[in-house]
Length: 101
Image (tube, rainbow, N blue to C red):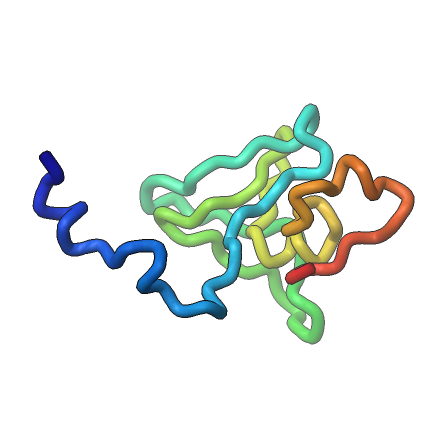
């Protein structure tokens, strides 16, 4: 029997046709790990957003990539090519993967 939350979810056929697949894949899964920021301690992304002269905060509850002391938000990781939306990225190693493709 479905619980109350499942009853309130639209059926897959009722979702808009333009609903994008929102899965992300870490290119170098041996080095980088996904983590969730917890707590009030300030934590900054190690990459500046183009045009900004500062490092931006990673907020409580935000998912980010971590490699040792380096933490990178998902937007910056996509720009740097650490993440991809191409689920077959391992087959396309010679071809660059663009965000959203």
